[in-house]
Image (tube, rainbow, N blue to C red; front, side):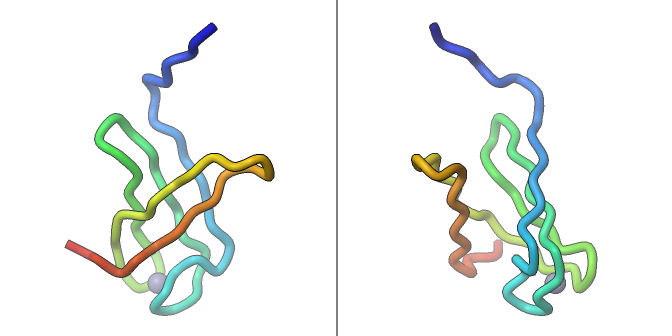
Length: 64
Ligand SMILES: [Zn+2]
């Protein structure tokens, strides 16, 4: 059985902002994950992988 996510998903990475280390909200939509720091305004595209231990989020600072 396959489930298709059609609604955006929101996550928050604790201290996930690479600039100011604030909590980093991540929204996953059909166009891919997108992170925007509400504290300093940094934004980027994190890579989200599903592992056995849950979601793994990596951010390489290719803000665009
Ligand atoms: Zn920040």
